[in-house]
Image (cartoon, rainbow, N blue to C red; front, side):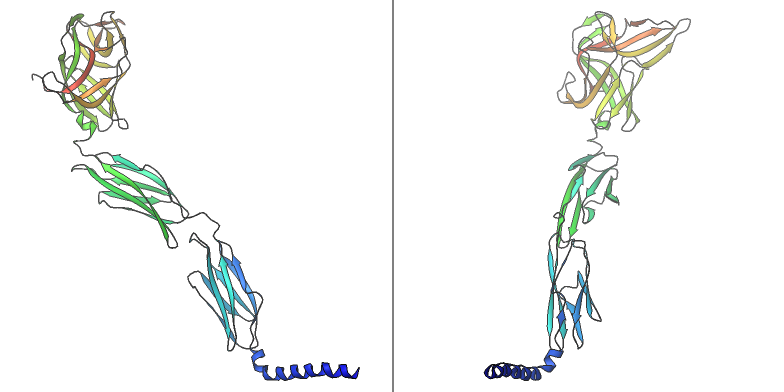
Length: 370
C-alpha cells in the first residue's frame, strides 16, 4: 500500500505546479454556450451566453445583414430577412485580451429562385390617336418599370402598370417597356414590345372618304345588268372616332346609314335593316328606305350583318386600288340594296328605278364622275 500512495502523489504535485504557471491565462478564457447558430429565411434574433472574467467584445464579418450587441454575460445576434435567392454564412467573433472564439452563423433560403412574371402581352400595337393599356407584375422582389421612348409614360399602382402613348403625328414608331426585378445581387428583366401606327396606317382613317360600290353584277329594279363595275357612289364620314361612321348617298342621294367600327378586329360593321332615308312627297305618302340584303329574283330580303375590311381591289381600270372588302352575306341573299315602305303600310317593296349590287362586292376609293 505504501508504494501506491507515492505513485498517485507525484501527478498531483505536477498538476499543482502547472496551475500556478497558467493562472493569468485561465482567467482570460472565453466560454460560449454555442459556436453555431442557424437562422431561417425570415431572419430573427438569437442570444449566446458568454463567460469570461475579463472584458470582451464581439464583431461580425458582414454588417450588411447581421449585427451583434454585447451585454453582460451574453451577445445578441440579429439577422435580416434573406432576399438574395441563396443561403448565406457569416462569423461573429468574440475577443478578450488573450482569447478569441467564433460563432458561425448560417441563414437558409427556403423560397424559390428570383422570379418575374408579366401578366400582359409580349407585344402590342397602339392606336395612332393615343391609347393606354395595363399589365400586372408578379414577383417577390423589388422591381421597377422603364421605357426607352419619350412618347410613352408608365404609372404603377401596386402590381398594376398603366402604359399610355401620346397621339402620333409622325410615322410608324416602336418602343420597349422593360420591367426589372432585383434580389440581392441578382436581377431579371422582361420586355414588352410596343408599336404605334401612324394615321396613314390606321384602318379607321383608311375607311373615310369617297368610294364607289363595285360589284360583279348589277340589277336595275328587277332587270339584270351582267356587267361588273361601280354602280353607286357614296362618302364615308367620321361619326365618333374609333367607334362609328356615316355612309352617305349610297344607292339614293340623301341616304345616311350609320355603321360601327370594331377596333379589336379593325372591321367596319354594317347592321342591315335600319331606316336610312325618309322622303316626304307633296300630295303623296312618305317613303321610308331601308338597306337590306335582297333576293332579287324571289322578291324577298334579309337583314343580317356585313363586315368591311381594308384591302386592295380593282376599280375596273386599275388593280391594287384601296378598298373596303365586304363579307358576311347570306348565301341566298347575296345582294345589297334598298327597299321601301310607303306611308303607314307594313308592306315593303323593291324599287324599280334604283340599282342593286349582286355577287362579290366592295367599296373602292373613287370620286363620283371618274
